Image (tube, rainbow, N blue to C red):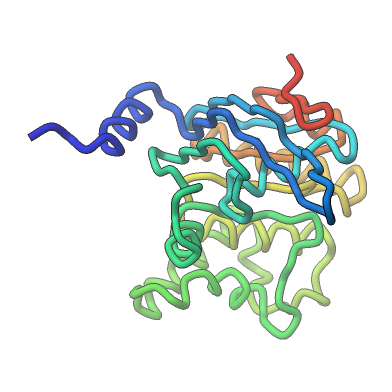
Length: 239
């Protein structure tokens, strides 16, 4: 029996090493009787293990593209395949389950729960899994060790510096061993020295652990840590 078309595409994608395959992607918003284009006919491939920086001026569509790849938003038309799955065709429930398994999020303002310790914030994505308490603890301890915060597991966010909070957020992004890490201006709220430390950590995660990272940034120095630069202008990819 021939393999289903979706399985064939997934196999071809895996063979090429593609993590993200985008074809004919458009995104627009409707405001009254106006259609406001954000992304226009995007075609893009990102390979497994790449560290990619998305750059462009404010309003260029870079954060929108990141959100589409992460399954936070849905396109107006076109196809987005991540690890062989056309996420644009998933229901909201299936998409939420897919995000929990495949995407690790790092945000500019950390998005930590202030009433939870660093340990509890990192553990949060595992609470709905079937892992035992011991297994969850082992994973959290490993992730906190990777970001250099083994001695801060019982601290609350307001007891940590901005750089330490971002390290906790990175540990949380790593905890479920996601297919891709998406980072939206991860150093935008940090001073230059701390930003460099966070970028060096992301660089190490990519080089040493092979983590696939897609990062939005407006900072050329941050983009310099990436292996590849993708530039957007008014919703269009620019060479």
